[in-house]
Length: 115
Image 1: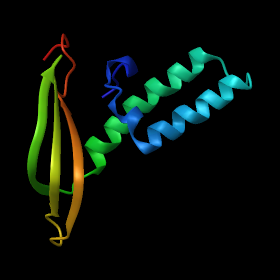
Image 2: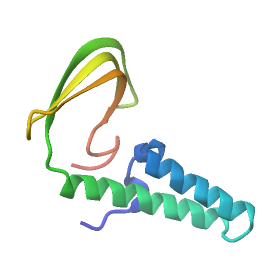
Image 3: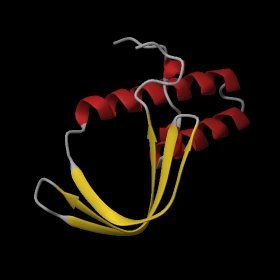
Image 4: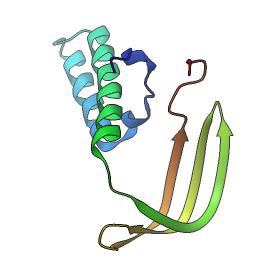
């Protein structure tokens, strides 16, 4: 499915790989190796590529439980802050603990996009 890169959420830019990409692009802009417009196109392509890769390649499932600290719903985006979280992987039953977790959940399609 060839979608317009501008139609993807920018959520993964705040992941470790997204932050590394943005730092590298900032460095290239500051030494005048690329223009800011090219950096924006690269980030838009990153948004599309990471979204499609996660949709196609990740098949693992997990369950989690914890104490819901805060939640909000704004602009079709749910944000949950959870404390004392226990994750259990379905494959193998491995358990991982975390003190705090932030979950951001968006619709598959952005507001205003067709069906």
